[in-house]
Image 1: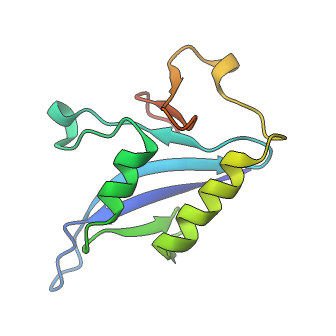
Image 2: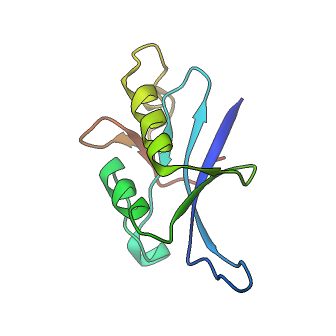
Length: 114
């Protein structure tokens, strides 16, 4: 069982329409797996945890879970840091060749997942 997290941005104050990118999935017993994006496909280049943090710093970006509940940015970064540092969680690297780690050791893939 896991929870997916999304970044909502370009939120229209009148109609509530928004754009959304899948950030990651956090599953019990596993390290977070982050979604990576190519600029030519999505208009944003995200290949590392630092790239995600820079994206989240934009004032109109909101982080929500798969149920639509907003998560405070500071709380989310703290949750990710705690789960990243815990040695007992399994890595996705052994299970899939399309996954890599960034400089900080966070796991990423371009493949869509949920």
